Length: 332
Image (cartoon, rainbow, N blue to C red; front, side):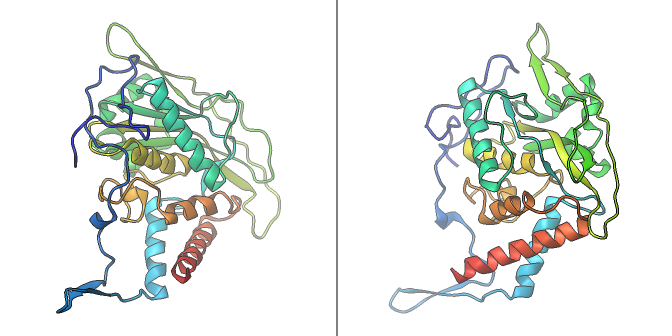
């Protein structure tokens, strides 16, 4: 990849705000689309060169069973509705705050997340709001999380045991965690506990971390139903930490899209994905900056499916919706 300061879509240098770590400059490439020629050919595609130097491409169309198996694997990798735990999504309007970069670049990232949220049908706060989604750009993701953990480890109570190494001890370019809440499926008030958000203050030494974490009171009410679970899971707060050294070489657009994907849905930690998903960004750096059509379809269906259903039912709904979308794209 080309070396040089990471730039946003306006071409302006990507800089760090003075109130965070004394961060080093990060190297990357200008934020413009990568060439399609760099992408891998589909499995089963073969190219043969004829005697007149023309290229003939022969491809074998995947069967519906193969397509369904790939979609099932995609949904499995995201980690939504895993096991017996139903989907969690934002019910309150999201209000992102971006730390670790200049105000100008922070607004670009926040606007990017707003745009993705609006596209897929997630609720977005339009006026001045109280942050409930924090995106942090840090020189060291591991050290930043360690500082937050020392200050208030209760932020990480909902990180699954099998994913804690990914959050605390890995060199992953991006790591994240959530606070969720159950509430009656027919509505009702949230708990009086405030959502989690991170505050970073400067000082003579290392940055100080603090939170306004409240003690969430889970409300459960039940009424007879053969289909409804009578409760719905909501994301109350999400934090995403981007390690700018580990994300070296990737554009601000692509990293913002990745952050939007994992902040808008309760994703499995350390998620990786196929070349056609933004979740495969760090495994397939030449895939391009945008969310894939499958990612958009997935999030759109996630924000329209009933929350008061079993996880098994929700997984089935997601798989069928993505299979229908995939079939429609092939026909077009």
